Length: 398
Image (cartoon, rainbow, N blue to C red):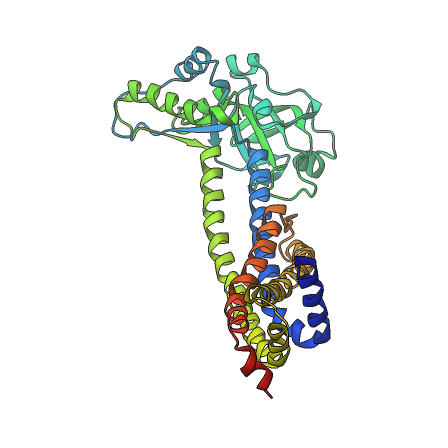
């Protein structure tokens, strides 16, 4: 009996007991679909994280200067020098100064708006666009001009879409609005990305309580250069401070890699737990194949009496077990896609975030291979039992 004949006979026997076969495959179906959904969820989470970090800039380094433990200081000229002397690693830099205090527009006080001092390159670093007026310029920085750029939320809410040329107050200081940022979020809200004010970092530093710049945003030429750029920057700062507690350099790419690693570990554990049902399904297949051997004892005896070799008998039952498991795996893939689509809709509705559950070809291939392998593994013992039956005893079996 060749392989195709064995497969045809296996399909015939499977179709003869549809309900029993389906119940036998149920563990495999659940296991495969669960693994596909869980792996797809992990892929969706990773893509969501990558997209979120891409908006912030995965090639971005954030430098925090505390000066703690050192009597030395680093100036913005020192930071600009480091960037300019290493063009193979660094692209742009912007000092950032976070200011406190409410923004006053007319007679209203706005406490939710983020007020930040930045350089003229900051908007390019963040990928922000200017919708009206102009952005900050070098002359604004060098002359410590009291000029600012506001977000679209403030522009619409307090200036009826015509903020350029008007003014606002930060503390007791009056600032002229020279530009309006393009809308960043689909839905603008108080305290969101579009609720912001940007002014020259030199002005912000002078008006702040410390009078110093404690933070810098630096971009690298590529994501791949982030690790080398971070190491170089840390070495340069250590040469200045001689104390590594006086500064900190945070790489967005390293944070993303760390979070992806954590997601991978979590998904691997969950997938392993889900895969337990595959083992349960394999035990079910072995159980039903043992029953099948008992039911077909006379058939086996007749075939052996007619000259069928043990390996053909074993081949027949192994193929039948593998086919049952493989069909369960294919059904599991279908249910996996169905559940993935349902999970995508459910997650979007519950969280309001556009995160998809994305099944991968690798997960599907693995699921099919594992399901077929389980059928062969757990079908071996019943097949071996069938192959070793004594034909005389088998013919006498009632």
